[in-house]
Image (tube, rainbow, N blue to C red; front, side, top):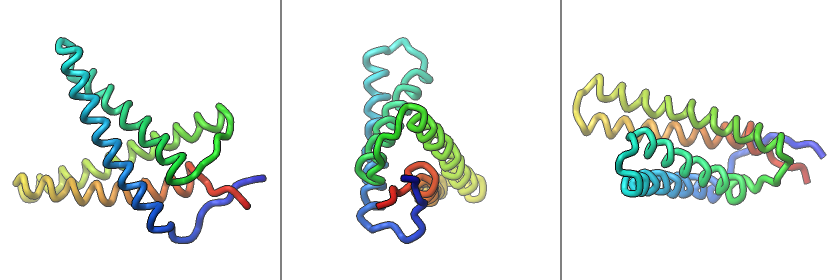
Amino acid sequence: MGSIRRTGSPAPGMFIRYVLFAVLATLANLLTQEASIRFAPGAPLSFSILMGTAAGFILKYVLDKKWVFEDAYAGHRRELHKIGLYGAFSVLTTLVFWGFEIAFWTIWQTDLAKYTGAVLGLAVGYTAKFLLDRSFVFKERQA
């Protein structure tokens, strides 16, 4: 059977799980960065950032696939395609987040403005990513 795109509103629990898993992935990212710094103190900063990003990305993808979108395994090729799309949407929505943060800092030049922009950017970015993932990465299976 083929797949169809979800067109209705998501169940509230689905989006709540998505946000909760975003928090868990962020914690995994930060903890992995800290562990990388402690276990490889001579490594460049980029090493800890890369390790943290990889840990957060992998955890978020697996949690979203299984517990948010209930997406079945579709073979190696299809899974690689999904991971590629998921990653591309992650980059796109990160640019949205950074855009808000930088714009708020540029306009008001205060820490409060910077963090307000960051929070708004994250909210917009995660909402957009959820909708993109739901529509293009993890498509609903037909009954």
